[in-house]
Image (tube, rainbow, N blue to C red; front, side):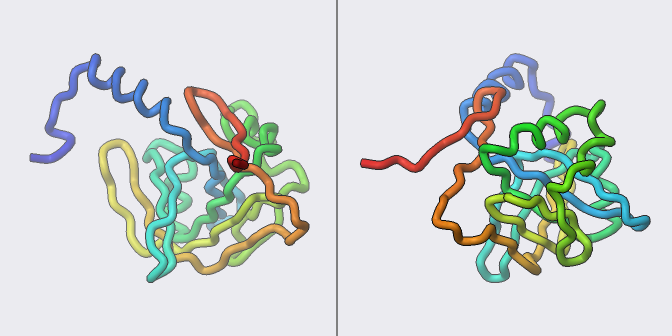
Length: 176
């Protein structure tokens, strides 16, 4: 039986959505370039490391998202792990009416493959798609990590930007 063949009642969907709101997830911007060199991006909480051998990441992207065909056709993407002070940038990537402003600031540099790299990101993982798997409404893109951009070592550990209970939060390391 395929997953899509299973009918799920609305009450179960509502409980599932409520349960996922309780799981804190780091926010990343997945970015890519199309064949004309235009930059595309969206905010995700569905990005994670996959393996150390080979170095790999994965990200789930809704097939209706404007970046989906860009990643599928271009075969590369960058996962930019957002820091707590990236709230204004997150806002631009979360609202369709701000689409034209997403890359309008000097917060960006070009990385390997010409991929947009967020300056000040906790880390940026530049990847080549090695596999893709459609599941439900999404495609999971599996990327081989070709480069990792880390911020300069200034002794200051930035806190990640996290999504929890329908909003962004900041977390700090626990000090005993």
